[in-house]
Every structure is written in C-alpha cells, then in structure tokens.
Length: 268
Figure 1 (cartoon, one colour):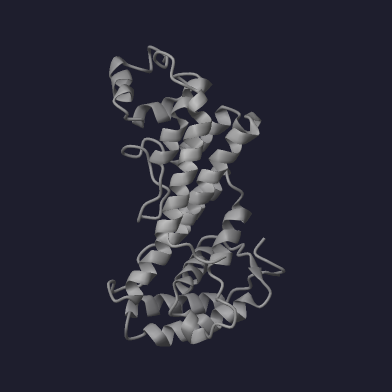
Figure 2: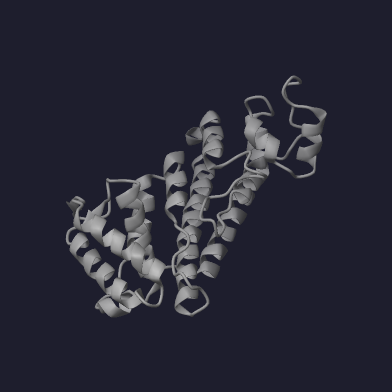
C-alpha cells in the first residue's frame, strides 16, 4: 500500500466522519438525556448542552442517558477522538474519555449486535483514523528530508497502534498489516533511495515498537535481513546529518541482530 499523504488521509477521515453522521442521524436527541440524579448534576446537563462531551462521554448509558442517546452523540464522540501530532488517538476534553473508554461504551451498548451499516461506519472511521496516524509520521519525515526538521524522528505511531489494538475494535492483525504494507520499499527501489523515503521512518518506527514493546513482531520471510541492510545504510546516511536518529538506528540494529522474530509468509 502506498503511503497516503496527510491531506489525503485527513480527507478520507472527514469522509468517514460524514458517513458516520449520516447513518446515525436517525437518532435525534429527544428532550434531554436523563441521568441518575445522584451522579448527573444540572451543571453536567448545561455542559452537554454547550457541546462539551467531557462528562457525558465518561457516564454515557451507565448513569446518563440511553443507548439511543449514545448513538445520537456517537459521531461527535468519534470526531473528538481524532489523532493529532502527538500520535495518540486523542482524548475528549481534558482526557476524561479516551479510546479505551469509548470502546468500553460500545461494548456496553453491545455494538456488535447493531445493524451492519452502523458497525461498518464505525470501523471505517477507525480505519481512516489509523491511516491518519501513519500519514502524520510520513509527514514528519518529509519535513526532515526537506530540511525543516533537525531530528528526523521525534514521534511514533506506536502509541496509537497500542491504543487501537487494546480497544479491540479493529483487529490488531489488520492494523499491523496496514503499517507493514506502508513501510515496504517500492519495487526495485535501491537501498540508498529507500532510506531517504518516508517509508523508511515507518520501518524504523515499526521496529522500535515491536522490538521494544511487543516481542511478537509479525514479518515476512527475509524481513530481518532486509531491515538490517536498511538500518545500516540509514546509519551511515544520517550519522552526521541527524546524530539522534543515527543513534536510534544503531540501537535498533543491535536489537534486531540479537532478536529472533518469526519468519512467516506475511505480516498476518
């Protein structure tokens, strides 16, 4: 899969959000979402009416509102959890709700029993969300290659992957597959050209995550040897230009040489 540019990924996410809003438009808010009087105050209701979802997101359905109310607010909740340049999937208003909290609410609502169209638009948003995370990393390396960034790698898609995987909404294997495809070199692309491409940073980030955070690194046969060549070439390419990046490449090369990732037929 070619690495999507950030504007294209953001456009896909916007289209996914629009489709989600259209599907869930059949759930208008009728009056006010009733809440447990011991748990939901008048101030909470006022905050929700102002468009602030912070308290509602945490209390939805358990102490505040029905499943229909949750479906009404779901497009706004997912829009608020849009990834940004920190590479975390984001939080709703001061961190009161994150992706795992949102996933818990979906589970509480038995969302896998919802109509297929409703399930699909939620998953489409998460797919587009992950593409934005990868595109953000691509954009950062492009800034470095253009001389507008000194380090070359200051962030990671790893935390976003971890959050998405732990939410158990999109399958982890599917997330890994998109990441794995995005870091592949173009056909017949020389090693020297690959290490100067945005895909190289996705490879570095992939290795950083799976060598340090998740020992079950899924790879195709020959991946380890190819990755070693890319890291070695990258180290010499960036030793003077970006010493911090070069040091990370050296550390990853050492870890990769002393690891035994499984050789499978694909990235799962």
